Amino acid sequence: MSVWRVGRDAATDATKTRGGPPTRGVEPKLETFIDRVVKWIPGDVLALYAAGVTAIGAPSMWWLVVGVILSPIIVLLTPFATTGHFAPWKAGLVLAVLAFVATAIWSLSIPNSGWQEMQVIRDHAAQVALGAAVLGLLFGLVADGVEKRLKA
Image (cartoon, rainbow, N blue to C red; front, side, top):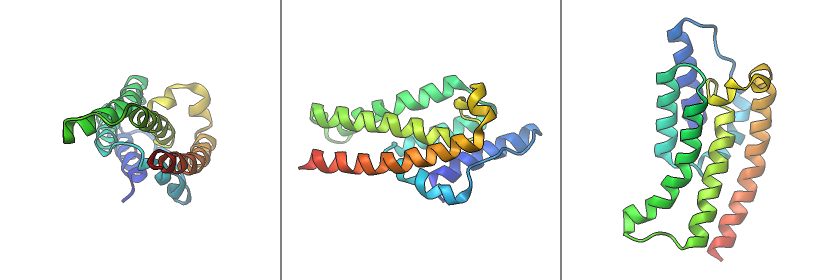
């Protein structure tokens, strides 16, 4: 199961639990494009975010901000936790920025994310999900290139 489905299914389950109407999600065909973004987001943040969306059960801008801010922090701290040393400053900063952007794009595709507190996004959920898929595709290509440049 992709991480996009984890977030989508968690949000849908929360809506069913509240007895509300079914949540409109991204068409499964778009899943591939969203998954291109996921590899840039720390897995712990994805799991925590999905759990938070489920627990809160309603759009929460606060929880969205926590998830988007937590991603780059985790990216910066993980090398230290595993090796006792931080990543080189330039590489660490670039990877942290990629995690930040990836989390923001991915969360656009998740029903009940904090983005839905914004009227324009709530009113155009399908278009936003499609836009997130396009952004995910473009982001994945750029991020892969950036990673190759960092390794060179």
